[in-house]
Length: 197
Image 1 (cartoon, rainbow, N blue to C red):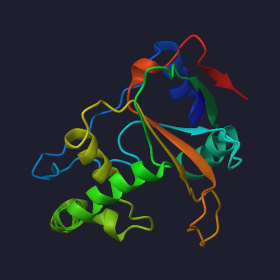
Image 2 (image 1 turned 45 degrees about the vertical axis):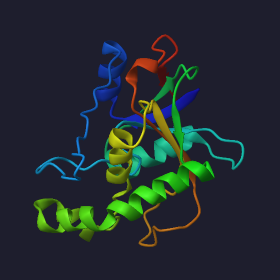
Image 3 (image 1 turned 180 degrees about the vertical axis):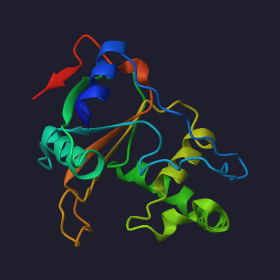
Image 4 (image 1 turned 90 degrees about the horizontal axis):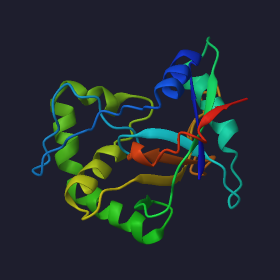
C-alpha cells in the first residue's frame, strides 16, 4: 500500500535520512479524563496522516497531499511529497468506511460526548470547540483504541472532506479524499519509501 504525505523539504530530508517518524501518543484515562495542556488528536486519532489513491470513489492521493500541505502547513514555502510504502499484510485496519466499524465509533461517541465536551469547555483546550473546524472525533477514536479494542490498531482509513480551497465555503458532506492515519510506524517499508514529484 502507498500513501502520500506533504511536508517541508527539511522535514522530508530528516524523515528519509533517519528513516523515522515520531508520533507522540495521546493518552486518555479509562474514566475519560483528558490530560491538560496536551495537543488534541486529529480527526482520525494520533498518527502520521497520508492520502491514498482510490478507484471507487476516485481520489488522487498525491494531489490531495500536495493541496493539503500548501493550504494548511506550508503556504509560502516549498513542499516536498513523500510516498510512503506500507507493509499491509497481517495488520489490523480500523476502516471507518465499513458500516459496522462506523457504527462502533458512533456508539462510543454517543456514550462519551457530553463528558468530553464538558472537559474541553472547562479547560484551556476549549478553543477547539470555537474554531472553524471543531472536530473532536480523534478523542473518541483514541478512547476506543485504548479501552474498547482487544488489538492494537496499525492504521485507520476514512474517506474524508478536506477544505483544500481558499473560499470561505469550506464544509461539505461529500468526501474529496481517502485518508490513512498510520499508528504503527513499524510497518513502513523504508526501502520503497521515497520523495516523489
